[in-house]
Length: 157
Image 1: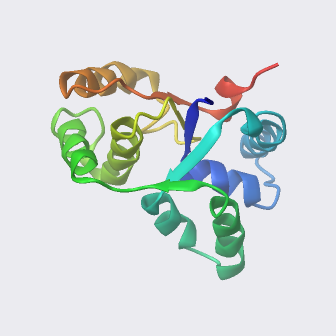
Image 2: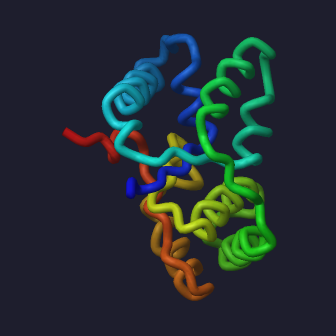
Image 3: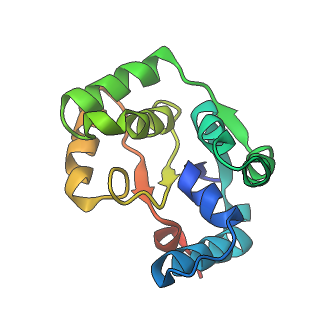
């Protein structure tokens, strides 16, 4: 059985966006394309209704491209368990209040036993300074924490 990877909105956005002139963003886009081409078939890709909602925002044509990618994935439910864990992550300061949806991404992945959360959100998700607290909150609530990482970190040879 393949490991599950929760695909967060930034990954779908980088995968479908036109090439960016900012060299860092362009590099992230290329890495995302590389990961998608070389690694996605090794995992069971999942997302959630929260990702779908976020992907719908913005330009209708770009949104449709994002939704087309998401249509190939299983969608996880936003359960009461996930809402409770998200509140605990916010209460503990593991994720700042203004990033409540990011806490919910983590909680949905964790409560569904997902091994990896793939994201380019390094401010509130793939952030080493927040990782320990996120993991402690998850363990205290009785869950194994998800590995939050960028596509670059999950590239395999």
